[in-house]
Structure formats: C-alpha cells, structure tokens
Image (cartoon, rainbow, N blue to C red):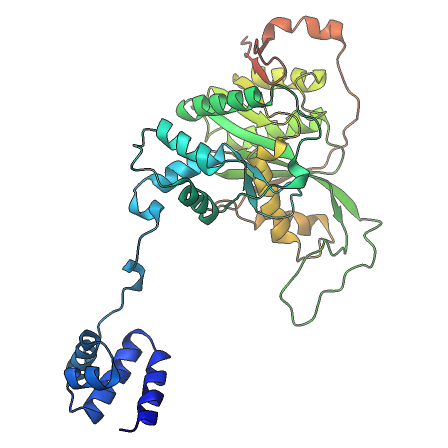
Length: 398
C-alpha cells in the first residue's frame, strides 16, 4: 500500500465516529491485513482494542452500543444527588423576570460566593460544595442568567430593601410548609391592544403575515390579571375591558377563589405575594376594605406580603407574562375571543392556564375616608417593623 493510499484511508477514518468508524477500520483490516488487528495497528496507527471490537462486530453481526453520555467527567449537579434541586430552591429566592416582560428569560442577583454560603447553611460539607466558578456555571446551565439588566436597577432604593426581602422569604417559607396555607402571586400586565397589529412577533409561514402599518385605533383594550398558585404552578389569567382598579383586582381574586373553592377546601390562610402598586397598595383604602369583605365571605385569613419598591420583577407571576408574550406575539390578536383563546393555549410548567373574562366597567378613584377606615383598625394587623409591607387581615364570623 502506497503512502498516498494510507493517508487517504486515514483521512476517511477521521471523518467517522463510533460504530461507523469501527466498521470502516475492520473492512480495511480484512481487505489489506488478513484481518489482523496487530498488523493494522502497526501500519495504520489505529488502536488495537478498537480494531478488535470492530472485527468482532463484523464477524458476529452484533453491534456494540456507544454510551457517549457516560464518558468524561460528570457535571457537578449530576455527580451530587440533590444539588440541582437545592440550587434551584436557593436561586428562586433571588430571581426576577425579564424587566421588559418580553421573554421568558430570568435574571438572578445570586453570586457563586453567596450560593456557596447558602449551600453551607443547608448542611453541605465544605468538601462537597463545588468551587464558586463551578457554581456560577451551574446557575447558567439551569437558566439563571447572571447579567445585570440596566432597566431592573431601582430608580430609588429605600433603606429597608434587604429587610423587606428577608420578610418575603420568611413569610413564603412559612406558608409553603403549612398544609393549611396557600401562597399565590398576583399582578396585572400592561394593557393589550386588540387589532391587526404586529406586536413585533414572528411566525413560521411561507409568506409573512400582513399587519397594520400603525398600531393605532384598537378594536378593544384588554387588562390581563394573573393569579399563580406558586407551589403547584396552576395559573389563572383574567382579562378585563375597563380600568385596573382596586375593585377589579379583588373581583379577579374572588372570581378565582369561587372557581377553585372545592380544590382548596382545606385552606385556612391565603398568603398573597404582590407589589405595592397604586391600586393594591396597603394604604389603598378601597383595596383593604374589599379584601376584608373577601376575608369575611370566605373565612380566610389574608396575609399581604409585598415586594420592595422597584423590585416587583421578583414576584413569581411576572415570569408568566414573558411566556405569554413569546406565545402569542406571532399571531394577530384582532379580536377579544382570539386573544383569550391564544392565552389559553400557553403553558406554564407544562400546564395550560385557566382563562376568564370580566366585561364590567370600573370607576376610578373609589376610596374610603380616614374616618370610615378607623372602625376597621382592629381588623388590620400590620408588621411592627414593616407596616407597609406585611399586612394581615383576620376574618370576622357571624
């Protein structure tokens, strides 16, 4: 065999992998080297073990399966059982949705150093925990983007931000561990214009969809309001056609509870994660009054747990809005029915949401006077340290 032929054969072998490569090398050994793995190794420079395996496959007709996944060093989260679940549990406390609410991306303020400390607090030994660099890579592999997002930086940071976050984490943990407590996350999304508008979407069609050249004069405007059962992942989206007022928010909560009463028959406390927006603020008299009425009607103890100002993107429901935007942006939402139907086909954690519609006009500016609210003072229990950010309402029976 000439040197030129050898190089051509070697080059062809380099382009193959696994079974195909062994099959090719075995055919060369049988044709030019009397089926001898030793001779082929000496002349061609191929590994004898691989040649013998290939010749054995050619002789018996039995193919050896390649298990490439088991080769090399395992990922740290695969090598240490439970690490991935613990990292996720820690990261969720420090993760926010895409600030622009345009995608399903998440961002975390957690660093490798702080994650390592949190794992130690969970009981991991020093020699069990991967390096800080590896922990950062694990966060990246699990989908927790570590880039800073300019828009997410607070315009104004109050001194109590860390204290408020600690209170949120503590209240959430207490609720999640109590079988008679249910934690939900609520928030509304920006109004959706209904009409033949592009919404910057993309779709897989032979020809591009035709949208209006200007996003003006909508047929209608929808106000999406979301309620997420955080532990189970069950999502409810309620669309309104009027304003996002305190009455609209509480009507949505009542609508959701009435539809799920049987499912939550054992629940005695409702912990609500929310931001301190103008219509559901703890100082909004109409919102607090309506929540007291809801508490009395259902017999539920209500605990309102607020996120710090300018940090609402950490509220779990915010991530659902990014999923919804990605889901329906390739479609022209030119009717209310179409918008509702498309929303009903999105999935959050593999589950399609319940979608409802409230076609009611809400009046802005409804409120109670300070004198009217004084008689309910005993009903509203505020945290001593964080009175604006942690409010409990006890039901009155009879």
